[in-house]
Length: 286
Image (cartoon, rainbow, N blue to C red):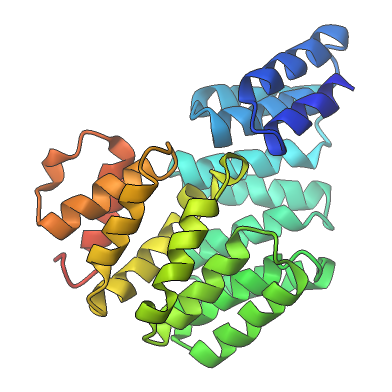
């Protein structure tokens, strides 16, 4: 029950301190139980910003149960999204799939990784596998929608996949984002600005991982917005939510870009990474 409480506090009640305490209590009761170590890994990775502790927790879970797929997926996400080690991420995801071939998340992780690496065919294979395993969560549909936008500029296909994601999974925070992105790619930022503002404002602490894990897609969308002359609108939107930890780096980075400020003006490392990604892959950068 303590492990379940940890998951409840982490994933639904946005109480990371209580989650940590519950996981530690579960470990105190049964030190050979792998699941609370995995829970700690997720907590340290997604909510507390402590990647070293996350890695140690996942390793401990694997040490206890070498056939447990979940911590390998956690390592894949950690290496991909937080530590910038794509080779290790790929290995971890494939290990998770080796241990549990019906586990959707590592296929999705690989799809996202391959999308960033512009390995379009490999990404398509993984997102299609997500559909084969489970159509109801919208994971494959969202991935294929982004892939259509980023890999082919195929707005019609992206809209079809985004509509399917909406039909299956309206509550996932990534679903409205990809639907907004389709309209932005279609040149309709003005018609999407209020929806984007609402999405940013409504994003809860329990979903605070979304802007960072989906930062590559979000950056590419903001470049499209910038091409339509709407980046100042985005800066204003981000300022309204800049009191939240998960949006503050975005607000700092976009404000700096709009102002034409130097990269060195940003002391926040995440804001600096966002600034670099935007300027190095857009017409603003060289």
